[in-house]
Image 1 (cartoon, one colour):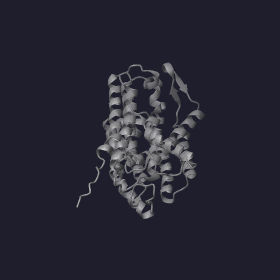
Image 2: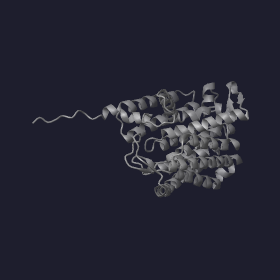
Image 3: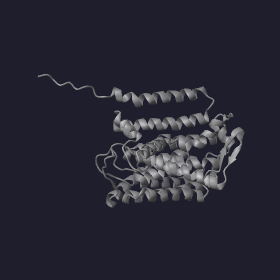
Image 4: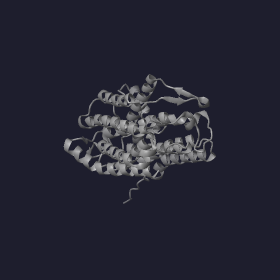
Length: 381
């Protein structure tokens, strides 16, 4: 655990420092977010935060390779797979940089996303099995695994890109998801007496650190945006880390709770849906946006100002409070999914999740009423 904490801190510190360099590059190259009608920022903000996050991830990876615990107790494929994910991340980050600089069309951007997902698949980062009932394995042939992996990676990349609409929102949501996923990987390995060094745990620790290091520059009022270079990068790393789960844990290991007891079929299947559950908030926003735009006869990729975070602003939340509310929902889904997966038979699990749901709903809809400005009284002459 201490070495994972060190990886997290190295990633955070490196990203924080690289952000200063990325901001200077953005200003010199003209990669600046101009103010548009659908935006909530009032002044132009530099892009290219993805370069800083990629630098933080790469630095943490190099340091992790030198740590005795991770390099000696882990399997050789741990660093090999993590390295492949970082190369794919660099590829999709490059596509994002081109978009930040030249605003490439949506189809070209989608092609870059598919290319990065294809790179992962070509080097064996793909779904290989699902757990079935009674501990049975449902094996996927290479074509099925490739299609499913490509869909999950591209969908996650676009979901994170879609939610990147308020200062600090995407970095916080993905950072929380990565933290929850790290807890899941580490507890599953510990409870099954397996090596603690796994690709999923390593990538999620690195990713959580990169998001944490970027947030001080990106939280409202932001001094730098991650841009498409950052949103697509962190979406790919998060989804790829979840994909590696099916290749490094057997279904019976995933089906045992943290205490080693056998669980039902639903918790057994639930961990493999973590890429969806960890990003349920941005994915829900993505689905609603597609439906909303197609019903209006517009392109699904056409921008608008009706995302979930825009609606939070409309009902009375401030910019910062809207972001914190989205954090709460992301944390509720991410950590709630992990708790239910690890401790499905415990009463306290459902009590804790139910209490968190009630609190989050109350803060979402009651706070605007409490902080709403009262009627102004005009003094009588």
